Amino acid sequence: MMSLENSSQLRFILCRHEQGAAFMAEVYGRLTGTPAACLSTLGPGATNLITGVADANMDRTPMLVLTGQGSTKRLHKESHQIMDVVKMFEPVTKWAETVIHADTIPEIIRKAVRVARTEKPGAVLVELPEDVAKRHTAAEPILPIRYRRPQAAAEAVKELAARIRSAKRPVILAGNGCVRKRASSELRELVSLTGIGVLNTFMGKGAVDPDAPECLYTIGLGTKDIGTCAIDAADLVIAIGFDMVEYHPHLWNPEGDKPVVSIDFLPAEIDEHFNPQCELVGDIADNLAALVAAFKEESAPDFDMAQQAATRGDMQSELLEHSSDDGRGPIKPQKVLHEVEKLYGDNGLLLSDVGAHKMWIARHYHCSTPNGCLIPNGFCSMGFALPGAIGASMVDPEREIISICGDAGFLMNVQEMETAKRLESNITVMIWEDHAYGLIAWKQDQEFGHHTDLAFGNPDWRQLAAAFDWHYQQVESGGELPEVLQAAREHRGPSLVLVPIDYRENQKLTERLGELTCSI
Image (tube, rainbow, N blue to C red):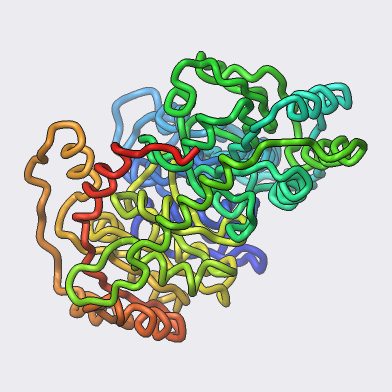
């Protein structure tokens, strides 16, 4: 901390809870591709970090985690605040190490940053015992030298191109690897050239433009949805940057007999429902560029895209449902997201917390830019969106940023309201209030026909906002949404918007999808 105080290159952000610090660092890394560091003391400071670290690691975000530790003279025995931090973090990081000798710090830090950035990116932990921290060293930092990621062999590119050409109804499943490292621009060129439809996962939003005719929107609810019809009808699934942690193949390839090819940074995970017949392993953008070149060498492929066009049309009708609801009372999720997308969908940024609202955001909100919508969907941790928005505002203070939280998730890191005000973060946080753990209720209703007691009380939101000196508005009707959202966008500094949400739509969606039949 004393060294950081003298640094002109590193900015230290004082947070109100270590979990908030981890989520801020996660979003910074996810948006920039460069790891931010989150810092804690030993013992409970380290345990408070771990949820945010696990979330970043499973969502493929580069992060540097720095924790203190007691003296090496007492690590072997029962002692004040001593616990094995490295072992605790090993399951949720790519690498975890203790500094034993001060002279090794340049090597350890250089390796830590390289491991964190290397595809697929993730979190790394460096632990610094107190006695080692006091030692002097003449060791100098090691100059970072970048390297180019490898590309698949030309023969593999030709083989995969041939497999795609031999299909009649191929479909692309775009995962979160498609919003990193230039992959989105190459993917857009591929689909424009071939006309192949694209389904994106929750974390692949923005990989293709939602206005493009090839966009089939988002898949991954865990139940049959309109987009599933495109996979059912496909005779080849082209998985690009796809992580099974997001949307397991047994949900869309239950018999394991659907032909699959894969383009990813790493070889595919072994799974009986996901066994690619051909893989391009290496830099996704470079491999997609090579695939585009291969298709340009021959005449345009003759695909049958009628079913995919029907899928897009059916989903577009769903997205417009309730878009004109202007009445008072609890507001339908579809209406809220329709209005939010009109203001933030082009160049803004939406961060979703975890809860029932996440499912609606995933299904109904679409953005034009890669990483224009951040949804934690690997580890799925509540409490992500408020500190995440603060981290996003540090990346680009002028970008229009909105977080959508449930009333439960928002209060899990409510203390970071003070951090946002102290930093004058230019963010809007929207709370969907239903006084309950809505997603758990939704799932229990699906499984058992009723739910347990999941209700709770909330604070006076207006007084809470005033206590932290935030701008505050409450929506009373659907017709007020455009004006309220615009006022929040124009306010400089943090703004809180409360929306009473109509979660009766949850069960209605479940019933409608349960009766779903594909158009073609």
